Length: 279
View (cartoon, rainbow, N blue to C red):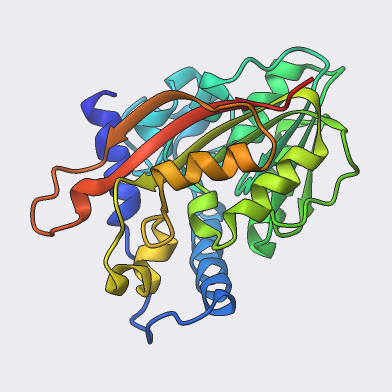
């Protein structure tokens, strides 16, 4: 990972944008905090007037799109999709998506990964973005219209209940979203259900080596920054196996900071992986 990529990832963690609030005590509070935060991210995307085809190539938007995506990838999407990007990786870069396949993006946000995947599957394929934040879905649909991305659709739903019948999907991608979900085993089970035999998942997400302090897990700002809900790496991989997938293949794993200033920051990693549903 380059210095620019590392800086882009750390900017996601340090972005703040969450007002002080009482500690989180249950899953419903986590859901509300996540929706509030990413509604603001969607608003940021709606107001974007940089990046995209007219960009100079400089770090104009200051979002996760810079450093994680090639300039030609950013140029191929709308400025709004780039500005609403809040991932910690580039799952389309590590995927083997083929023309004609059906791809589902769990936590699709403004649609950046959906639009890149749409170019990979072509007109004979289909991409479905799933997100639980209304403003993100609205922004993504507006972006699809601007790009004339007729093979992409967006559905409002929690990723713990994917609104797709069994065994209909070839590839699932997800970019720094499962760290926002308390019930990760449920998401992995849903991903397994909708994938065809031989289907693949490509995930970029935040994990930890060891456990985070209780005060970090209870902090809304840390949750919406994909840190408070980051799963223990070994447990995370085991949950994927228990959902029915073959042993995941780790593609990359990078510490997001040296840990200076805290006793725990150095244990947070960006993980990219692939797993396959058995034939």
